[in-house]
Length: 90
Image 1 (tube, one colour):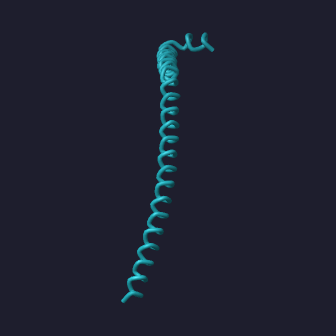
Image 2 (tube, rainbow, N blue to C red; image 1 turned 135 degrees about the vertical axis):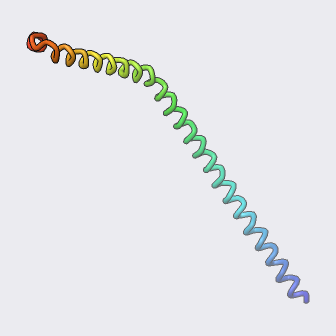
Image 3 (cartoon, rainbow, N blue to C red; image 1 turned 180 degrees about the vertical axis):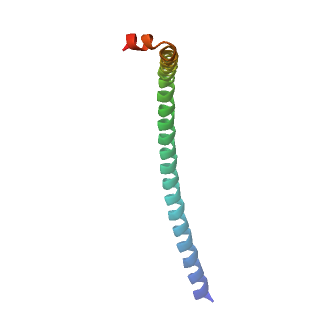
């Protein structure tokens, strides 16, 4: 019976040592995960900031495109009514 108790005490010590090692490994890995999530968060914030900086430029180009489209549509209207206007613009 004393041998069985020594065996179970050794098993308990081995279990405790293995558990401590695994907990330590998990702790290190979780620290790396947190660091990587923080890096991802900073990258996403940077992307959002850059995107917001281009919003005004995008709106400017959108307005330019709309104005240019209206001018092109206006040219088509005049050219279909009076062939002389379409020749003078060329």
